[in-house]
Length: 450
Image 1: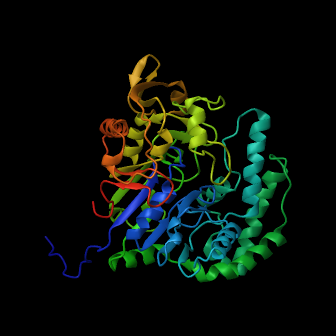
Image 2: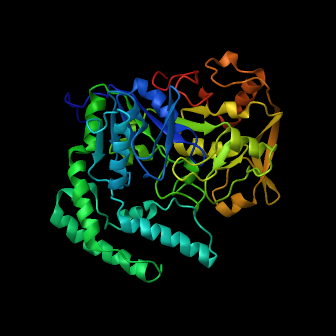
Image 3: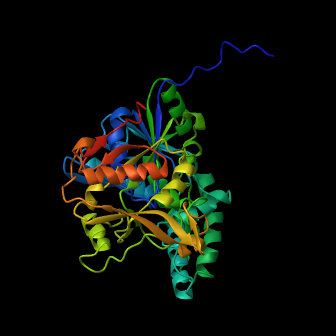
C-alpha cells in the first residue's frame, strides 16, 4: 500500500449550510437565509433565474429579491451567483440599481460566475409564445413566469448557450448570437406564430451591459473553495422548491433547473463534501403557484373558509408574478419525499402564525390511490392527481403565535401540531418562523452549530 503523502490537503475549516424549499416554492427561504447570514461570510445562489423571488422584512421594511442572493442585505457578506443560474443581465443590473437606491453596497460584494448561461430577449419571446400556443391549442399552460428561463436552460443543455464569459469577447459573442438568433427566429416566425427579433439591438444592448458586468465576473467555484479553506462559513441559497425540480418534481409542471440540495455542489462549482448541513424550509401549510397536481388544495373563493383564511392572512401572492397562490393543508407525505431527495438535516417551519385562530387543523399523512393507501408522494403527476388525501385532525389554537421567539411560549396545541409532524416525517424541526421579520424566529438547534 502506498504511504499517504504528508502534503494531502487539510480539511476545510468553515462550515456550510444549504437552504432548500421542501414544497412547491414560496416557503419563506429568503427570510431564513437572511437570518442565517449572521453566521455566514458568503451566500451563493446555485440554480434558477429571476423567476424566483424572496421577500425579506427587516425592521418593518420589505425588500423583494429575485436574482441577487438574500445575503446582500447584510453588510460585509459576499454574494455569489453560481454557474447553475441563468442570468438575464438587464434584470440583474436593474436589481442592483434598485438595491443601491436604498443605500446598499452591491457591486463590490457580488460575484457572477463566468459560466452562467445568459437569458436574452428571444428566450423571453419563445417562452411567452409557447405558453400562448399551449393555451390556444387546449394543451394547457405549464404555468411559467414567461421570463425565458426554460428556453435558456434548453440552449445550455444543447451546448449552444451564450454565457457570461462571452460578453468579454465581442466578435465571439456576435458570431454565436447570429447562429442562436437564427434558430429561435425560425421557431418564432413559424411554429410559434410570433414576431422574429433583430440582431443589432440585442447585440448593442449586450455590449452595453457587458461593461457593467465585467468587474463582477468571477471564477465562483474557486473563490468559494478558497474562502471555505480559509475559515469562511458559506450559505447555499436554493430557489423554488423540491417539487418543482426538473427531475424530482411533479413533471411536467416543474421549473427548468434542479432545485434539490445536491445541486448546490454542481450549480456553484464545489464538491459535495462541502455540503455539511441541509436545512429544509417548510410552510406550516402548503401553497403552489401555477398549474399542476396539489392533493391538499382547498377552495379559496368563499370568505370564511380555511382556504380563504390561508390566502388572505398569509398574503399568498407570488413575489415575482403577483399571481395568487393556491393554498391547502400541510402535506406530510409530500415532505417525506422531499426529505429523502435532499438528505434533510433539519427543518424550519415558517408562517406558523397564519394558522392562528383556526378551530381545527388537518395534516395529510398519506393518500388513497386506486384503492390502496400510500404514505409518500408518488413520482407520477397523473397518480398524484388521483390521490385522495388522508388527514389527521388536530385542535387549533386561539392564542397568537406572531413574533414568539421561545418554544415554550407557543400554545400547547401549536407545539402538539409541530411535534406530530416531526414524528411522522422523521426529520427534526430545528427552527420555527412566527412572522416575517428577522427576529420572529424560534431557534431549537442552530444549523451552523449542529
